[in-house]
Image (cartoon, rainbow, N blue to C red; front, side, top):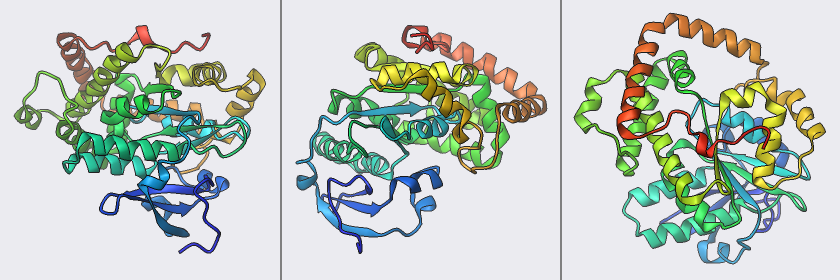
Length: 342
């Protein structure tokens, strides 16, 4: 229970879970400075926190819905956690990394909730996530990959919101999967299963086909499915609301890229501020472990893994490129790309 006075208008009370059985939301207290101590807003990292009595969804829906709230959707292993941390800048924005409340909406939908009920819960959730941490600040949310099939709903609910789809180049993505080992090889299969359950797959395979594919092939299919999903959303929403960014560009010209993202989100971030962020701890440490981790270290690690798995990676890239061509999926969607000079 809360020992610090709870206020629905206080963003330090994180809207953590949607309690669908009671049509209510659960809150835990997470001061702004504590966000920097956890890579994800999940129970595994947050542990036991001060909580408040659940608040009915109807009361949450009374909050303003016009606060500046933006989204960083991503394909995994593309520096998205680092990027959302970069937007934790007082006076500009606050970044929220993979809040569980959005995963709960996915589960609510999967358990057969009516579309209208899902939209109502998502409306309340985005109002709660959009509570500004300071005067004039925006909130930038990075949902988990599981939330990607709900991206259109989240964007449409908040007409002022803009979104970014961040992705790693296919080869880099596959190197990451190989580098992270058996747990990650299992995760890419679980993710693909989730997309199948959510109706987010429109590729020329049957469920049986995936049993015949290697782990990296399955990983590539999940990567392609996300590109297909967001390419269709970009065509529907237009570049004003949804843009693409690859992690290679982010790391090549980070300060200019941060400026372009800020411009897309409508945030005021001068070139000096962008350089300060790049020179600070966000770009100099591992976003999950917090240990020192430079671009040079990353390049050496990836080169070693690529060398060890070169044959498999090269074959899967060729195979996935052929699949993409047959399905009309661009591996480099320039029509929606966010340019660092824009």
